[in-house]
Amino acid sequence: MPLSKQPILKAEFSVIKNWLLAGLFMGFIAVFPLNAANISFLVMETGQSKEDPAGQYPILWENGLLEIFFESGHIVTNFPIMKIGEKPAGDFPDEAERDFENAQEGGMDFFLVGIVDYTQSGVSLRLFNTKSPQMIQEQKYTVTSFKNTKEEYENIKAAVKVMAARLNQEGKR
Image (cartoon, rainbow, N blue to C red; front, side):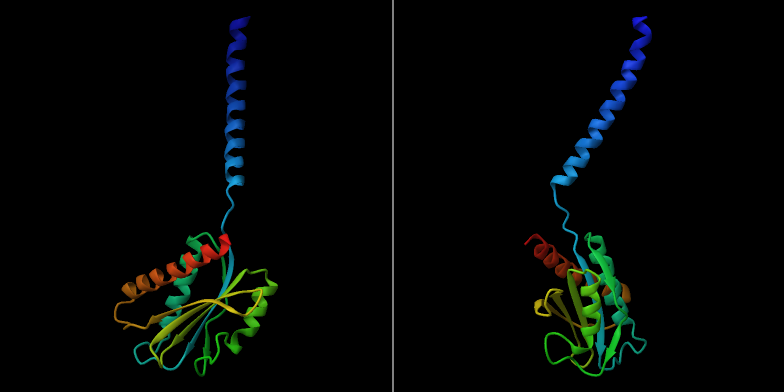
């Protein structure tokens, strides 16, 4: 009789061991806070591009923002690309007000505006906390030629990684 109970005890021990390991794993995850932020962004373009008449450059920035922030573990949403007449005078573009309010109502933590300015051949990434439209950080990049889309996309992703790292620092505060 004792021999027949031995396989049952091994099976029960195996189940208990699996439950203990699962519990330890869940406890380990619960101890370390996740740094995921809710971020919404809007890409705006101003001026006329001589090299990019089809308007692919803002789409590259939009895709780069989506990809890098998502890969960084953040919850990401975006608004449709907006074409505006001229570069905004202040830090916060008036044209982005409605989208900013939608981001606030949607529970987003941050709002990022990317302004592609063809007249000055530059891109400005402006990060805002949704609690106020005061800019947290701005990064500027020079628009390069559009001859090699793959290379340009890699440059855009590298630029966005800098902003994602800044967002990770903001989330730890």
